[in-house]
Length: 115
Length: 113
Image 1 (tube, helix red, strand yellow):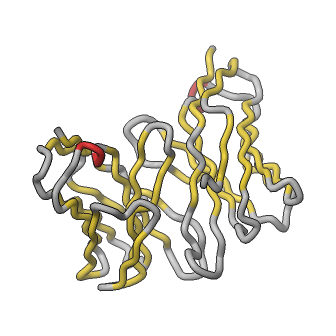
Image 2: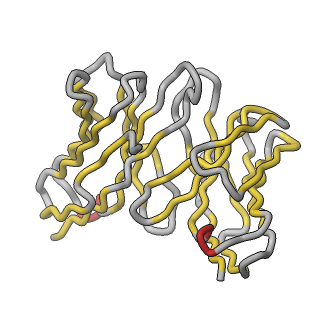
């Protein structure tokens, strides 16, 4: 059972455009939702994270939107640049109970930003 | 890279041979994790450790064992490697008991022929 579903699998955006990646989760006990960015040959790097007590978090050109009732969250990359071309993973974890602090990952989205 | 090193970075081995991957951290973090990454599957947790000699299974632990005899090292062992274990393996640390965030190492690419 896949607990975090991520879409789309791949995304092509023109330079300057907005990239949007969506994730949906099933486990209502999840209370931490990070996004990771991964370049080829490198480990995933934390990009931005949110908790369900806020509906939006912005850091520079990166914004997470969170909809608790729909159990969905999304990453928006404004003014996308070729340097943003990477694979992005959403994830979720819970802070208590069995399996606490274990990250469950989506399957990833490969973003290509074309000039 | 949160002070995490992984060794080897690349390894090619044959089916049936034992393989040990090493994760080393320099900042005395209590929590350490091993993941595998495969195309179309994202990252999946293999095993994790919450202290010296304290380990537990993750989602895809079959065929893997781990050991942690000192804080800085977390070893992942494939007792008898199979082609299905060809993957990229990542180690991660979680800085403290009150933090959800995990930081990842650079990865080890393992090919089992």
